[in-house]
Amino acid sequence: MSVINKCLFPVAGYGTRFLPATKAIPKEMLPILTKPLIQYGVEEAISAGMTTMAMVTSKYKQAIKNYFEPHTDIEASIKGTVKASLLDEVNHASEQCDFTYIEQQQMLGLGHAIYTGKPLIGNQPFAVILPDDLCTNSGDSVLTQMTKLYEQHPDCCIVAIEEVPMTQVDKYGVIDGELLDGSNNAYRVNSMVEKPSPEDAPTNLAIIGRYILTPEIFGVLENTAPDKNGEIQITDALTTLAKQGKVIAYKFQGERFDCGSVKGFVQATNAFAKAEGVI
Ligand code: G1P
Image (cartoon, rainbow, N blue to C red; front, top):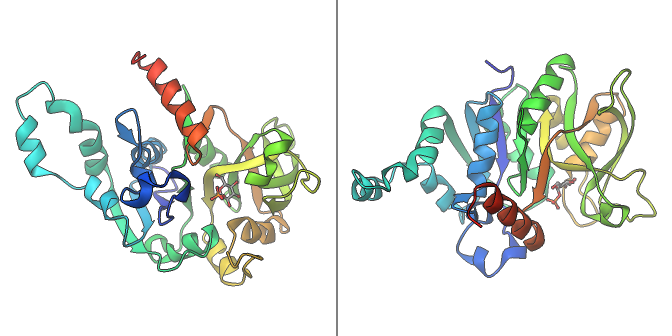
């Protein structure tokens, strides 16, 4: 069993970039082909050995909970037909793990969302997946790669990074750090900055939506001041731990699609459709 068995999903956001679709449908329920983004995230967490999916949700996101619960009428209607297996993947995910939920009452940033999940996590290391970032790899999933690295550095938080064009750094948390001895893909982080302008960015190494966090992060988040927009940033809390040498950034193997943007969503759809022979 993995040393990390809980994965937190911050899924309370409004998904305004996908309005009007997201007026009535959570953005995490938008599908790449026929499978919603949230399920890709859950499958990645399961692949990394996690058994509890902790959803930080909102009153508008009931569809996510419904999705992972049985739908006996549909089951009955497809039973014995050629469509009988179409719910297998989601049913399998539901059977393999527990789903826990807590409501985030106010949208005060990713750090606040993660802190809201504290009662679901308790005092143990945990993973975070932002389902907007859809990651694929032919070998180990990105989260599996990260849990393996965490096992070698159990006092550290791990963030996934990838190189992005300098013109894009203002969409991401960006790290500054040095490669760990003997490594070509893991950096000891010195500092981090949330959504810098290209002139202010220390590197083009951008954080993507996969984290492994030690429970120490909760105490740090309690003492992290909101930014100029009133949001509590996980990047700021991690900066505090980075100054103590406790954050590693990992350049993962695989491909990541930014499904939080319409362009990235379309690119993911095309890539998956080609891979599965749909087009
Ligand atoms: C969040 C984080 C940011 C990170 C990004 C990855 O930003 O605040 O540091 O780079 O996720 O997707 P958001 O995309 O929610 O604005």
